Image 1 (cartoon, rainbow, N blue to C red):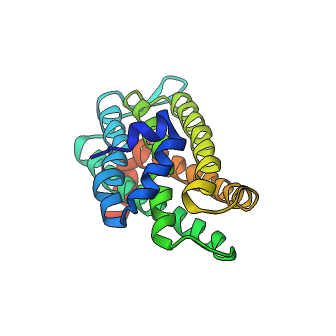
Image 2: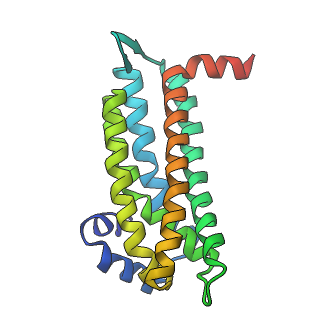
Length: 201
């Protein structure tokens, strides 16, 4: 389990090649990487929200009860899993026009591993300060961009020039997805009780 998590962060070029040679399936990707890594920001947010509370500045702190945080966490987790799949579909759509496009499965596997820095950056949610989470998100996004530009030519078999185009568009869409996730995070973990009550009511 998580055999590639450290490798993709420490020596990504070599790790991309190894992952490619393994011809990983979507089931294996989700079971051994995405389901576990996506739990990092969810579990850390749960702990931070119930034990510390979101600090919004000006002395305002919002703290959720255990059940409210659990409901918010489940929704957040499902959104993250869906986001990985959606980014993989975007990569597949962009790569379709090339001579030898990668399969949809390859693109989603790639998206699952390229999101690793974003998953890891979720650790800071244990102490949920807005500015700290934003900083960690930006750092995670920068390393994700590096993995994206490095991995698309080698892992998906797209030449460097075409890979740059696919990487740039994917990164732009990824930024939008990240912003959406950050917004959902603040809403769910900061105002989870009100949202859940409004949905129930």
